[in-house]
Length: 123
Image (cartoon, rainbow, N blue to C red; front, side, top):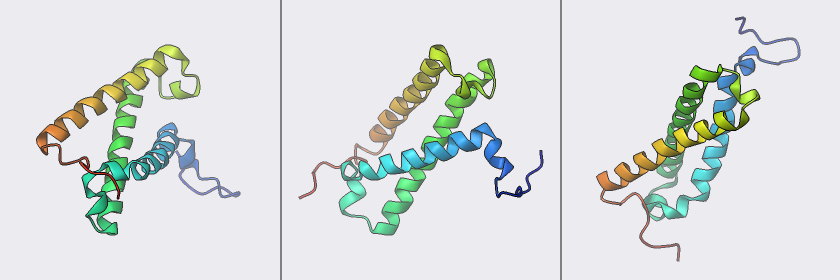
């Protein structure tokens, strides 16, 4: 594959399905992480730099979950399944991601003594 920038500035890397999926997933996840910031214990105590780092770190983790779920379905349906997903692939994709997320959040909260989430709201 040729990775040069085209005449009109279109980068061929964007043609790779995983790049498009990861970029969209990261952007959506980052917005979501910041929207739910008040629910996290660090929201009212950590400096801004640490908050940004924590939210970006979580968003990168979300992208890894997204890619793992995507590749699991792609192993059966092919890498371009997301362009013509159908119900079985969509349900499998969502179920895989949701299952991993629920288990990881449960064990993370149990590991950290539930200190991940805020016990008080913004005042």
